[in-house]
Image (cartoon, rainbow, N blue to C red; front, side, top):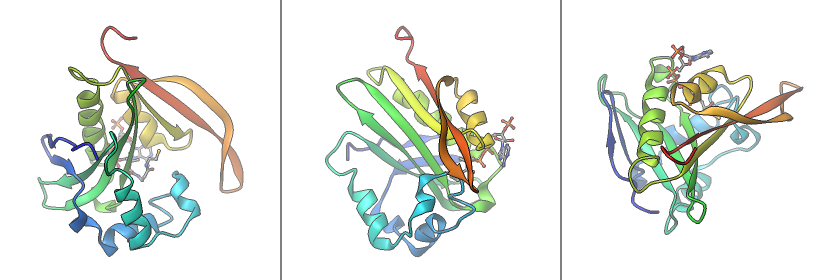
Length: 179
Ligand SMILES: CC(C)(COP(=O)(O)OP(=O)(O)OC[C@H]1O[C@@H](n2cnc3c(N)ncnc32)[C@H](O)[C@@H]1OP(=O)(O)O)[C@@H](O)C(=O)NCCC(=O)NCCS
């Protein structure tokens, strides 16, 4: 993986994902239906080996995988955030998973997200940052909005959630001078 730079925010350290964080606790997050409710990860069973494969997929490529470390209350590793970089087009697609439920609803998702988006759109960085979420994932829609990402498309009835077809909302923010 292109070495992800460490990003510090008030309550978080975002650090390049280190192999020692590949734990049963981390695998447990991905197998928790509540955590993956709005994620396509909900359709499969995860193991240490499938997680290792995901982490390994960043090796040697331009994309970044950060571990989200909470430092104010000592919660430690609470989730991950990644950016899939399309280098020729200078775009990055961002995704986040906070698996530690004690960390939910405290503004930490927004804090991590804004740090990564600002970094990606910073000097010498990407032209455009994109992300998508199910229309039902209200927390994600708020986070993207807070980070200045605006809706640029909607894939109608793209996912099936609890037997009901729901829209995917695609959002983006451009670097200054590229919008
Ligand atoms: C989605 C997720 C990143 C949100 O992180 P979080 O730290 O709990 O969210 P925040 O506390 O930063 O909240 C952001 C905003 O959403 C709101 N919010 C949080 N949870 C919410 C919920 N369940 N319903 C509605 N709004 C919610 C907050 O009030 C806040 O809004 P505000 O700024 O107007 O106060 C986190 O819950 C998560 O990773 N979930 C599992 C994986 C996932 O769904 N990833 C995204 C797939 S696209």
